[in-house]
Length: 148
Image 1: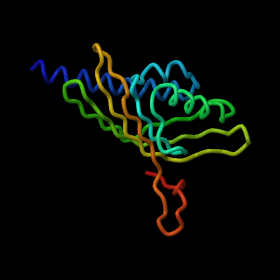
Image 2 (image 1 turned 30 degrees about the vertical axis):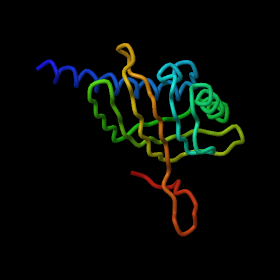
Image 3 (image 1 turned 180 degrees about the horizontal axis):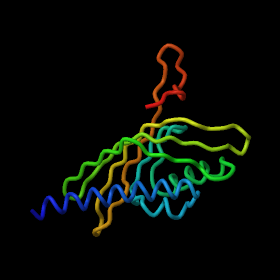
Image 4 (image 1 turned 60 degrees about the vertical axis):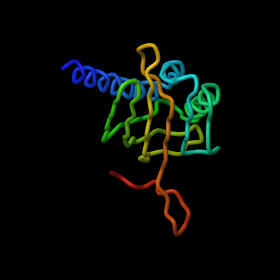
């Protein structure tokens, strides 16, 4: 019985981290979003380069993303699935990012995401953050107009 309660609690904690992410992105709160990353985090983002390794690289990327938006950033999570086992967990979800870039362009697109977590001293931290968009193999262009 304890194991079932523990797994439910772990899942609830992971879901709370994703909720925190939604609020932190909306508010462009760099410190808040960075507090959920592990010191050995790897990020595979939708923009170049192929890999961001470590909290300094992730912080720089998140800061650049936040500063590219004029005003708040919309961040809607859908189809969140969470799996936990001991001190490891992962989740998959879709998210819709929206807002206005500082150059005036409107952004409204769905992104696929996977986050992997490890528990350190009782606290879950993101160790792997992967975001992607599908592409059209015939044209090579990103498919930014898809909806779930």
